[in-house]
Image (cartoon, rainbow, N blue to C red; front, side):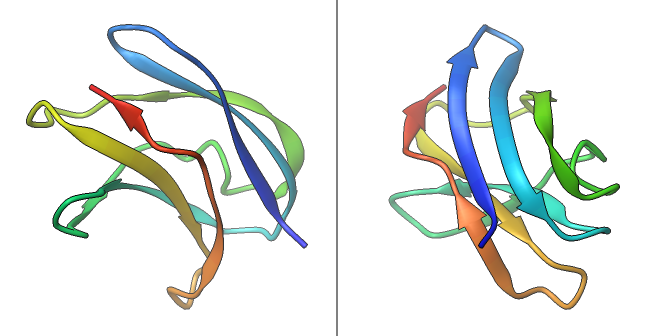
Length: 85
């Protein structure tokens, strides 16, 4: 079962740890109030497996978000806790 954990945050990055991700997994930012999914250019999860990465924060409106991992078919894999930008 894939896991995606929020580990840290700076003004420009979200730190994550991930476990058991399938190859070609994608990461998205999701606005908690609207549910809008915002693509991330990060390829940190694309090789799959386990590890840690810093995900660059795209140009987002201030608010509460979480990171969502999806497989190449667009199916839910895992998500982080909510955080603010």
